[in-house]
Length: 350
Ligand code: ATP
Image 1 (cartoon, rainbow, N blue to C red):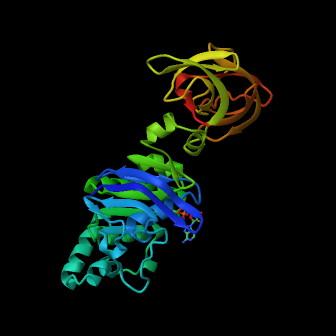
Image 2: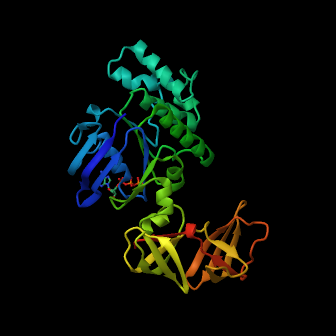
Image 3: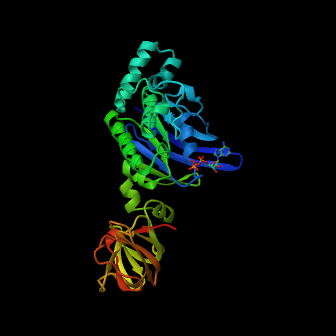
């Protein structure tokens, strides 16, 4: 399995910079998701790896080889599409063996390898069925087997779960993750679903308007989002203005928020106005004031089975809070205190 490297890669479509000066390294054997809102350049980035688009500027490497101007068929890459793109008139086995027979692998060997790829995705015994005789999740697995059989250096997924219902999505995304880890595959996976990205990735690349907004592990992106965009895109966040009064030599900042003062680790921010991202599930609602709390009034309360969702009016504006205490919920108009904990806060750029 190979690394994928982008060195200052841009892709222009007329005046549109779909990918804008992106540099990144995807380590071999890791699963990296490219996450971002519609139109941020995710699919274009994937197509650049596949050779389905060629960059306007910069270099792309797969393993040791520079592939910048190599066409798709000269790269050892396989791609799984959102639509699966199975041939409806071919059996499951023939679909999976197709790429091998096109590359003139003898039919017998092609079928043997196709059978073992089907076994890897848990579809033994489905050889003779037509795609129309499979469920959506099974069709998705055939598409994965068809990619695996080519023994690619890198496996690319373009929103592979979009056509599945919520329950199946969770199952299939875990299947893909298990397979990736079992076979040590290098996988680049495009999605606009942050929960999917958090659940399966070694690293997440968050893109905004053709650029990398942040690259990191799911935990890094969630707990230390670099800017407001990432804080709002990964999970939910209340983003409020605050003041950074000082930073000590261990990187601990003294934050002033309303009339509260507390310490939070800061990375690279300088003293002055800053934004704080407050995670809704890390804020605690209390009936009495704590050491670090802000007074508020419940504006809306919603019961969601295993937790309550509140909107609390405070002097910082409305705060969105998730509370696991469902046995004694707060009623609208109740006076509450919103406790701020160190875990709930990240200092972000605007
Ligand atoms: P989505 O989640 O909606 O699929 P995306 O993040 O994958 O979006 P891209 O498909 O990479 O976004 O598109 C990035 C930008 O490049 C968009 O502004 C899009 O309109 C533009 N674009 C993509 N392909 C082309 C093309 N072939 N010709 C012109 N513009 C294009």
